[in-house]
Length: 97
Image (cartoon, rainbow, N blue to C red):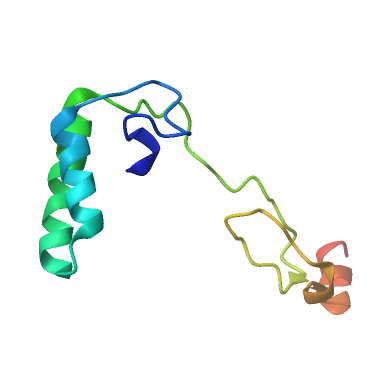
């Protein structure tokens, strides 16, 4: 939610709403987790009603793998270390037989 806070460095859309900012500031200072969660939910509802953020894309995992590739795990950064990936040679040979 801090992405759309008035004056925030990542608030590229220049969204500004006093009630939203007040709830966000109050939630940041709140030590009661339940109270903090309620304030953040209320702030989020304000931002949603104001259409403060317009999602233009949905992140997908564009990786297509052969079934004989083992150890591959999707992750949010889409970074894959080859040291954890192996090729099941028997399955590979069977795939193309």
